[in-house]
Image 1: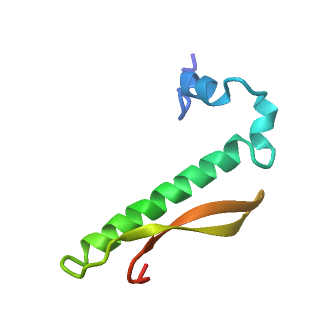
Image 2: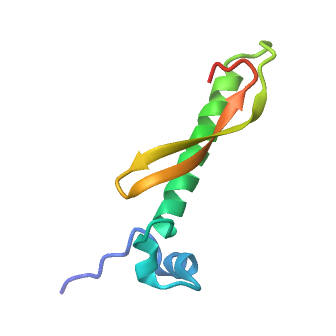
Length: 90
């Protein structure tokens, strides 16, 4: 008897992500996968900025909005918002 392997991402979560759209549209440019790439990239950049600013205690450096960058991915161009700091050291 073989046991059924549990998926890495629960089916309920996938259903939520795909709600209101066709599953095939997830792979289109600007679809679900591009949205996930954008969200994960921006989340990682914000975490790096937090770490960067935490290492400069007393330096007077703070967040200063976001700049827009376009990066190339395996599925095409992706516009991301990159955090900036006052001293432009990030």
